[in-house]
Image 1 (cartoon, one colour):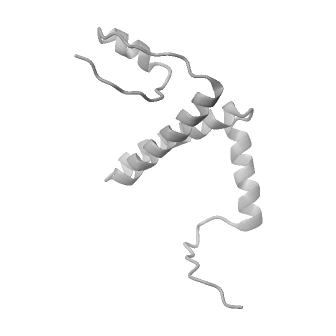
Image 2 (spheres, rainbow, N blue to C red):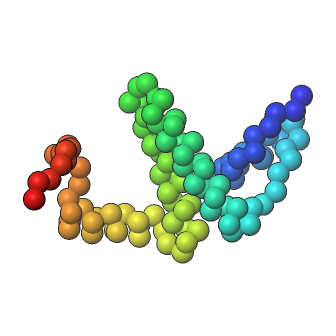
Length: 108
């Protein structure tokens, strides 16, 4: 039986498929294909966060999103700590989301 995936998968998935006595058909992506696949995978993971029912499920899906962010950062020449440092700089300058502020409009 054939099952179509057509998506970026984690590095060990191919070995897991082989261990399950299945034959994976795959190829290594070019730089542009990889970047675009990371973007698609990030969208997929966001949908999974949205659909998660429990906080435990949300935590696991957020971990998947974090792995995508790590891969994106490394693809453009940074590491996850570089991204976290940049986030901290932005947080210091513009704040975080702790106060849950929702801006409706401004009047001039």
